[in-house]
Length: 384
Ligand SMILES: *[C@@H]1O[C@H](CO)[C@@H](O)[C@H](O)[C@H]1NC(C)=O
Ligand SMILES: *[C@@H]1O[C@H](CO)[C@@H](O)[C@H](O)[C@H]1NC(C)=O
Ligand SMILES: *[C@@H]1O[C@H](CO)[C@@H](O)[C@H](O)[C@H]1NC(C)=O
Image (cartoon, rainbow, N blue to C red):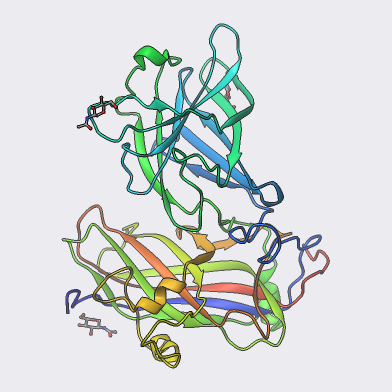
């Protein structure tokens, strides 16, 4: 076995039950509009660099198939945002935005990375698919809002999908002069993100703790046993199939809580991201529908491995929730919920855990979390 000492206990809990939500639940769910976009009433916010210089926000307006972006960066020069399958500039889809120093006008250039590395300057796309909405700069920062379609139909633009994309970010201290774009030097990086999924956001005024005592929220545990990450692995994606408990009617995931405990190095930030995917349980020649329940009982395996990952797991490709542990309680905005369950609902989910071991240490750990699930679709506020 290739990953012989992948070990440990990781448990994720989902809570089920009634819960009071502020306002109406307005999830735009599958079947309406774009199938890829499950939830539209969210805005995501990521700090792309380690020093808090590059802030990216985005949200999706599913009925128009538009993705809106807002970048706020500590520069008066240009800001680059790129989308790539492999994290490299060649063949990436890029947009350069800036606010003109003399006119104050915000601009966007739709570009792409050249196919080969002899040309490191982004090339201008024939069709411009990024539209500037607004922007300003002050003594220190540039802020630009812009949008594009989820799928632009331009071969130089990467369509946004449920796959993880590598997001390239960069900035420079001068406005671009297209003929001689000044290099971004060290001000660049890459981050993997699911662009089309919401991320749980912390709600500090959390009434869950009280409600759970009244059994209005039940709990679903997902446990992955004994994972060891070897020093030779700087990254590991671990996948585990889980089965949703039986619900006769639709429920909503309204929050998630992760608890991580390490056996070994305590202060490591090793778990990078977790994603819960829906499984369509499509069958392939030779696949056995009974296997799903066997997989539920196993501790999982390495994701996307030709040797180790069952092919049926390819159908677990629609992300329903993404989160970075770190904060111990993360909750959806009070007006939002992620629908799950129901008689004809999806039964199997796949939890993908991304372990980031860039410090190349040997790690064993255990973690536990809990999803909060409500059975009420339209309820009123109960903030205390
Ligand atoms: C976890 O795995 C390690 C080796 O892979 C083993 O020594 C240990 O006993 C296991 N712990 C539990 C709780 O199963
Ligand atoms: C690399 O790209 C440049 C400009 O795009 C082009 O002129 C050159 O022929 C390319 N080289 C190869 C080996 O494809
Ligand atoms: C410039 O804009 C940034 C981003 O909006 C803001 O954080 C900063 O406080 C502003 N600086 C000044 C001097 O107004």
